[in-house]
Image (cartoon, rainbow, N blue to C red; front, side, top):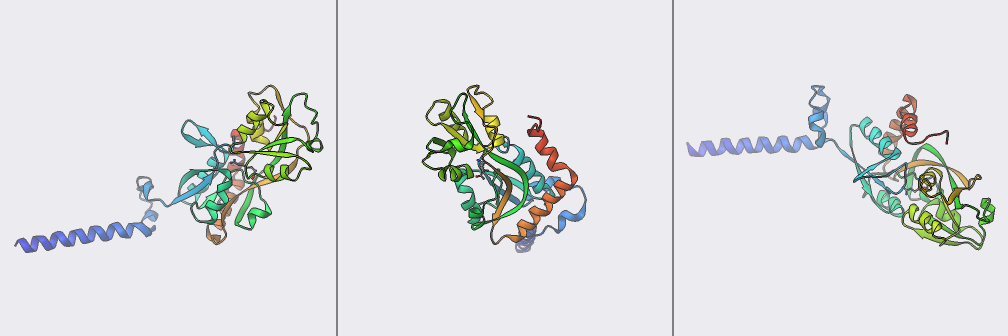
Length: 263
Ligand code: ARG
């Protein structure tokens, strides 16, 4: 009698274990449309996004939470794919390596499409246009980007602003971990100018009445996300979701929530 109970118990344990394992890979049970999908959220596959949350309005901290244009877009993409977005905040110059090594599934960080990066990772379709601008102190003798020769220029480490500054004749490039630190250094007269993307530049000088953005931008560029070279499946999924967001107007809606184009 005892023996029989034990085997029933064992059988029950086995069935339970099997069910638990089966749930892992199979998504077939999500398709039932029985309304239980929400309750199973924690079972949704996780999509890890590498970013650097020092870049308002694209990614920045609001309390302990990372928010911004890229975050909203990527949440919408993850939703379209039935996945759960997880954000990994890291140094900007670690993002390409994190994605190419598979530590993160993809990167979204106001990242400019750039041929050097394209050797290590694949870019998705572009989703935003931007420019590199020059911030100077009011009354500075730097009136256009051409006047940057021989000057002290602050940039965020590993950004396109960094490589542009590097190419300027006679310039001394100061590299900061955060774009905002470069702007602070400019306020404190430690450097003569900052080269950085337009929207963060606007955010960073909001409180600094002594700083201005030059009318003439340094370059025009486009933002895209990055995925590992061997992950065409995810590349196609993201591009498909991005297209839907563009077609439905949701992408413009997200950008419009953060950027006032009249400014
Ligand atoms: N667009 C520039 C680049 O791709 C700067 C991006 C910085 N992004 C950030 N999240 N800190 O290099």
